[in-house]
Image 1 (cartoon, rainbow, N blue to C red):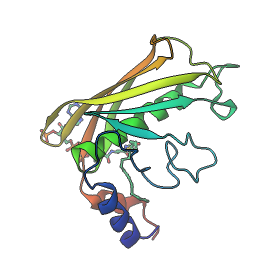
Image 2: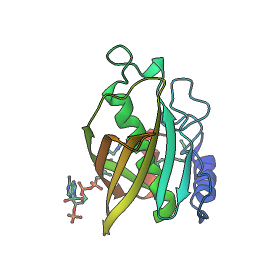
Image 3: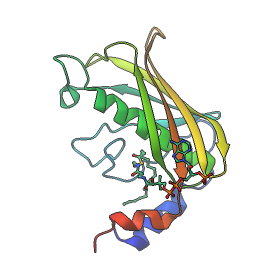
Image 4: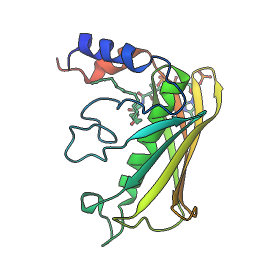
Length: 161
Ligand SMILES: CCCCCCCC/C=C\CCCCCCCC(=O)SCCNC(=O)CCNC(=O)[C@H](O)C(C)(C)COP(=O)(O)OP(=O)(O)OC[C@H]1O[C@@H](n2cnc3c(N)ncnc32)[C@H](O)[C@@H]1OP(=O)(O)O
């Protein structure tokens, strides 16, 4: 994707999103949510009020201990979910710090429900939190993160030269 395409898709993504709307992937190859990434989680995320929600099933591509999701894969999904809050706050930001609490093993092939929300915004800083629960509602993981808002030129660093 070149810079012009990037900017065009950016403006489209950051339009206001109605409550209940399915939110667009960060981009088509995003590890968390890109539909065209064969290694990815293909996260599908909706706006629910001032939160973002997703349902996810980890599979053998995400294995750590046998039958259990790798902690890095769980962190990927939580971090990517945070990235969807940016559609509600209205501008780009990136993860500066991420803390994950692993409350119980995340079992492959099992449905989990995730939700994330903004706790507070202070200038460029966005403090966010998320939780992941089993279908009975028990907490299996939670995360807290600091995102820092960036100008779109931040992403020039990854553009092909
Ligand atoms: C190609 C396609 C396109 C299509 C379009 C879609 C693309 C979508 C892309 C993006 C959308 C989101 C996608 C989400 C995906 C999931 C999230 C990720 O995986 S993000 C990737 C991982 N993260 C990084 O790669 C960041 C790497 N880090 C950096 O680049 C820098 O560190 C950065 C930009 C985050 C900050 O650098 P500074 O130089 O701007 O900031 P300083 O000056 O160090 O700090 C700013 C303020 O923050 C405070 N601060 C810093 N750390 C703090 C901390 N731990 N606690 C409290 N305050 C802290 C500082 O004290 C300072 O505060 P004072 O302004 O002085 O008041």
